[in-house]
Length: 363
Image (cartoon, rainbow, N blue to C red; front, side, top):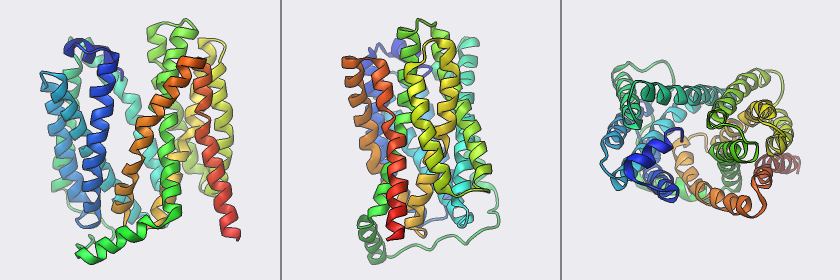
């Protein structure tokens, strides 16, 4: 996102073309490939798949860096998305198996390190541009890092933990698919985790537009929104890891979702760029626990099949595609503040899922 102007300039794309070739097409291609590959996490050692996924990610990013046109760029981004998804699925599979009794905290730390990576991204791009490069050199640097990580994952000896899973035969694997498809709560938790997309890139894009267009701030101030949101998310994940040692995950989810509703409202109606700073920090902090704890509950529905859970989670790509279009219509008709307010739907869904699950257990 921070390199959007560079991509548009080099490939002669408008805003619609950028959205199509950089987001929509790669997202669809990545979801299909990732769903097919994620099931292998239940049939092969996750560490090996992690190495293969990182190697494919490195090659795909290299393709993006060298792409002469938007079509090849879209293909490279789609392959990179799928490779990244496979690597993440393998890593999450390993986390779930090694921390079977404490998945909530394991995935919370996952969010923490992801937020720290998001914090580093603008600086990597800025460094590339500062040294006279473009988005291509930034992608090349990331491709090199992924290649080093792939080599380490493939050659490093496995650590202590559960044994690698044995390959499933056809009938048992097909039975697992049919059984998973009938699990209502698995789909509900995956839906809740998928809805977290509303308070990720989407809220960031709207906040950047509002601070630039409605509040009259500079482009530099608008670009800083991502840093503020990621910083809040990192702080929230670190605090969540501590809170989970003292209170239940239900309490953390409910309290953070309730506060998140107010944080979204704060971002939507902040009266000045100065007020937007604490608003975005607060929003990142409050939203941080949601994905980790909701995804952990989805894994708990099929504890022996984390790869299958990740494959089924690709169905939520529909949310990734439809949500921006729907919120864009709201922004066009009623303004950015109303569009941002509509994103409070995400924490309200979290509150609903927690309440309904508690009632379900009581019954």
